[in-house]
Image (tube, rainbow, N blue to C red; front, top):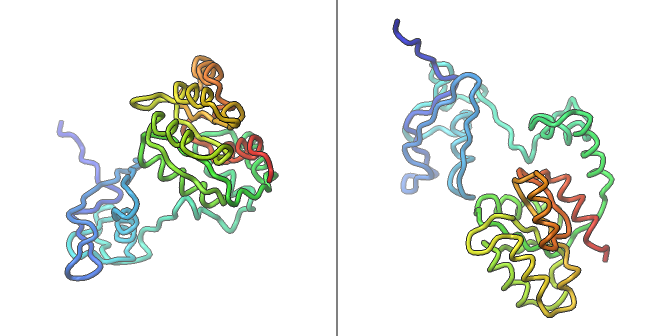
Length: 256
């Protein structure tokens, strides 16, 4: 018996998009989304991700290629496909608190727990303007996203790509320059726990008290024990819950 072919719910065929005749933004991009499937478009800032979404939703007509919805050509026809950026995901039929809970529930959290965390974040009315946070992560995309989120809260984030670079940065600035460090646990050259030990051993007055918050995908006791033994102040799990992270920063960064 011949295998039944599944028609994609949404398909892009060989899309090329340009702002003018001389500069293509993206070239020859093809993708398909089957019914019930989730597809991620990943790339650095400015690489054309939003431009592709514009083409899929008909807001921008591609120079070349087609967009198909259930096999029907919808190229350049707005109103057929829509998208919403997570940063701006607000539904008018829901309260502000309900909107804050929505991404947590979609991610699998129980509604009651999501509401509790959203309410905790709502109670956090701290002004973080000017607070300096060092973001340490070897994953460029993860680091870039977290930096942009922190900027939205008023922080002045700086970056380090591994534990060795984080130690050098802390050692090179004046005491109490950084208000907190967000430290990934697993990195090349020097892991987060080793970097934390070296920071704690620095001969400077803030070495013992600088808040260092571990970011780890290991939610088990072993990962928590490693963080505690290294001298980390607190621990949060990946993927990051921004409400929980902001609450931790509010707890451990003294008000100025």
